[in-house]
Length: 217
Length: 217
Image (cartoon, rainbow over all chains, first blue to last red; front, side):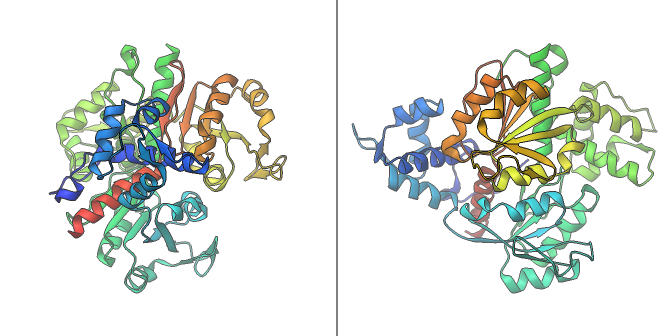
């Protein structure tokens, strides 16, 4: 699923760690909302169903250390996690394909809290050209290159039908995006200098159905 | 991310294979749309950037074999993949949390093509009780157990805020769902007999940002 490439030291943390960090963030954000000031790795471990030494090790990657008997300071841990995960910076994105899934992503205000700002959409349907979805303007495909360059767009979100996916990805790469977030259930190929991240919600469904089947047998 | 449990023989295929099968399905669906009748594993390998022996092995898990010189029959391969992946059966789902992400999922007509039919939504906002989103009715939390039992709901989709996630999951389990599809960025704990599948689009964002950073260094 992921490209391998030479990593610089600061990003040497393993992907499983990177995938657990958002769990810690979600948990400490909840604690902060409840007015809790400190949390031990033991308490986190109990709540999250993980090993406390695993948590301590994961957090040491982002240079956060707990204090003996007190644990981690909730507010500073939250900030450190948000910063490290890139959620406190704004990444500007263009969505390609404003159909049901694309429009849904444009309406999801949650993305902005995680550092992703969708500034425009592209769709081949001429009826959508010049419209807007949740205040985000939608244009025809001829506008892609101009939008990416003019708005400093670094992320292209791919939400087109499968058969249009590779072509749309090629156009995004040519327009100069740094990363493509692929929501189509197909495999996209990009040059080495472009990041590809796949979020196929449908392939997760296949995994879920398969596990449901094996329970029933 | 996934629960381990004893698997029956038919579901013994490795998760990486299970995650590649939707790629093959997407590709052969496109081929069928173009009127192509046969495809070799070599051609598939070239298009998908995979090894042809890997593809042949993956497809042997679902008892599909290609013919020498002709390759796979596109239409029957598509059917076999859809059936195996559970996309041709209907799984009835209840969505909990009809906020931005939850409503977005209710509007995504794509899910139904992948075998998931969202039949109702639950939200704590009293203004939503009795409303509908894309024709799907939304009710208050007191209706959960009755809906799950009365509508034969097997899948609970979790799209609530983080701090409400575990409680909502517990309620879904008590109501009798077989599986929970967790869209919250937090870790949910469920009993052994319930399937949990995590789709944290925000944790994918963290992975993407991290790779973008390492490119820039």
